[in-house]
Length: 353
Ligand code: FAD
Ligand code: EPU
Image 1: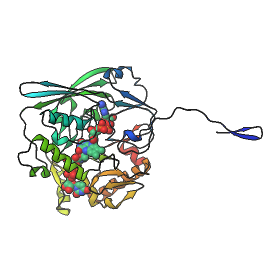
Image 2: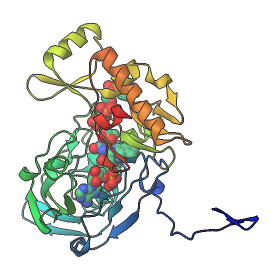
Image 3: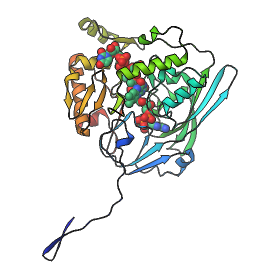
Image 4: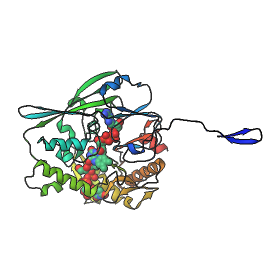
């Protein structure tokens, strides 16, 4: 600050505590800050937090993108521990929310507990896995979740939710609706049958002949490494948009125009389409705003080549959505959670910027 003193100008400095950076706490790595970062290593700490302050729950930030500096506290869920109970025909595994997902998958396979090997190498924590019901290569985590334990912020109590109460759907659960931002998942309990058969429903896995779970895990890692950028090399947040689900009538009219349109079964009367294909066909592999672009091997993954701002990303999201809407009459919805100064941004907030 420049202060006038008599005829002289003096520089005076006000000492302020450094603002914590979020850049390394989200895999999209846009520069951003929070007011405070509170790390939870024991679930009892949750009863001591002042929840009236603006806050945001965070695991490893691989499905969260900080667009602006967040004017609130980030609550990092980082409790650790895995407990296995053996039953006659199954294993029950209770896992603390802060455990790393891929390490948990590897732990299961190396302890001969099978079922989630198709979900290998998905970044993030165990606690975030139920939030969007993570899925890949023909498997969704909901198939193995027995219950979810957590802290209900609104009533200030710990609660247990059965798998049914979690209302899992494609990239969806009760944690994105009724319990959005109000339920801190502290533990997830999984149930794995001792009778195991590999799930090879995803085309490229069908080349495996009577594989072991370890071989399935290795193949999934190989496929993922060939398509998906490693966030620590090229920052990204995985699939940026959900694959759209459209009524069959709309699908049939598109198929008449684009006979090669990839499509998958969905609810009766609907088809799921591949957003990556729609984005590539809209010419977006040739587009860049600042350092923001789509990945050349997988157009559904938006990447940050660096030197990018939150506004570059907002403009790129608008560009993708406009192009796909104009060409296919489909409004893509973000899969990632976009966080602005005051909290999560809606599509309306994005359109208004
Ligand atoms: P964060 O980004 O930290 O949080 C995600 C959301 O969950 C936020 O809204 C946050 O508030 C909330 N949350 C986090 N922890 C808790 C908690 N303990 N209690 C309550 N709410 C909480 N996803 C897939 O489904 N399939 C894939 O194949 C896949 N591949 C990916 C590949 C790459 C390269 C990347 C970067 C991401 C990929 N993702 C995929 C997305 C991501 O890995 C998952 O969504 C993952 O579960 C996010 O975990 P996280 O701890 O990083 O969550
Ligand atoms: N495609 C293209 N061009 C592209 C990208 C994809 O033509 O640039 C085509 C592919 O050729 C294929 C189809 O689109 O025919 C689907 O592609 P892919 O099998 O790679 O899967 P996806 O539908 O793009 C989904 C999940 C991924 C998950 C994979 C594997 C969503 C939003 N994404 O991607 O999850 O790993 O299937 O099961 O459902 C994530 O959620 O972050 C994520 C990475």
